[in-house]
Image (cartoon, rainbow, N blue to C red):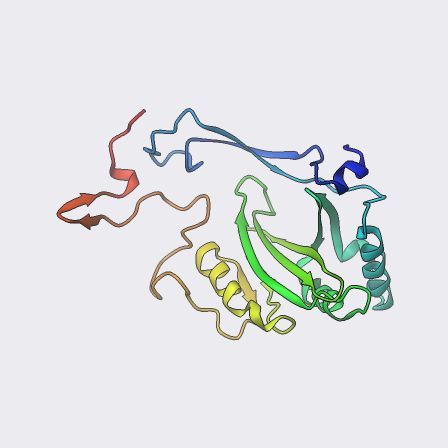
Length: 233
């Protein structure tokens, strides 16, 4: 593994490979006609970091461990792994504990991550049992620091608790993550579509979503859905 002093300066550790994609969309068996058949992409995730993490990261993780222990919980059963990737501290949290950890990150005087920058959703179909990732970026105005909390769920059970009770501004971001990726945020006050029509079937930003679309007419010319176009390969 890369030396942690290098990690603190923003370099990357050796990554875990979870899939090899080809063509523009990375979809197999559905007629990718983008013309990028020779394009190859390696899909990776960062492995757990090792101590010392460097910078202020060790202190922050130690404070979090102390708070979790004070709640009578085993830290290893709450925190899946700690990742340092390109100079950023990312805490992977077991999904049922995510609101508690978010509240700790917000309220403790040594952490004080008061500002939530929203949640982004990612779909890794080849990461079996961990296909859906919710990445929540947090910023400390008090200490001028940024951290991220990441929670995973399987396609077969795409549920995780909402963080709206801790960070109310996450309301719209969670709606978008559900609309486009299908992550169900349990306890959300109004989990409705934000981009797609209310009667839309499926979640179109998942990697395994069919490439077929809706024909678009522009000044008399019709652009057909990708699945019906001729191949350019």
